[in-house]
Amino acid sequence: MQFHFGLRTSLVAVSVLTAVLCGYGLAQEAQSNAAQNNAARAPEASKGMPPRATPADYQAHVQAGTVTIAAEFAGHSIPDPQSALSTEDYVVVEVGLFGPPEARLRLSYTDFSLRINGKKTPLPAQGYELVFKSLKDPGYEPPDSPTGPKSKGSGLTTGGKGQNDPGGGLPPIVHIPIAVSRGWEQRVQKASLPEGERALPAAGLIFFDHRGKSNSLELIYNGPAGKATLALQP
Image (tube, rainbow, N blue to C red; front, side, top):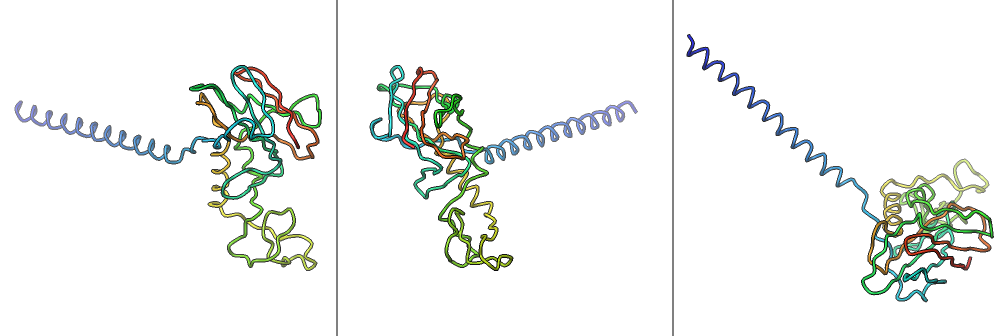
């Protein structure tokens, strides 16, 4: 009887241990799959734009310590090799940072601000993700709409008069497919100024919340390289 009781106890213990190990293995596999999925969904880091050949190829450039900061004002347009995206809510500045051979510098859009029209308080640069909601592509044509005249300033093909607009005064509402809008967002993210310590030269876009006209502009840098101010052309 003791033999059978001991054997039964051993079998129960083995079964419990096997269940625990299987459960642990499944949990580890679930965590691994979740990590892979999160990595796949994680946004790609900003790569910035190819820096121009020299600082003199920008509208303005100035020295900050051993680093040369160059910049050019792009208005409400977002420079992009594929097509020119635009945003009504933000203005865009393309910046390039140049240094001596093998120089590295910690980069951040928060090192920049923009004084517009001589206002006392300059505007701080904003993260690229805030620009997403106002992105437009002036050349975009909805795939299910007939080719027609584009409404001025709308950035979208109207395809003629709307059903609820006999006079044709207002363009119909056009819903941008999610895949298209995500493509625009990825392009803005990749072109924005990279973050963290980077080898120089490096370049990218920075964004400022501004909807009005820009008659005078001063880009202000206050970062690891020092302090500098650049007068830009509107």
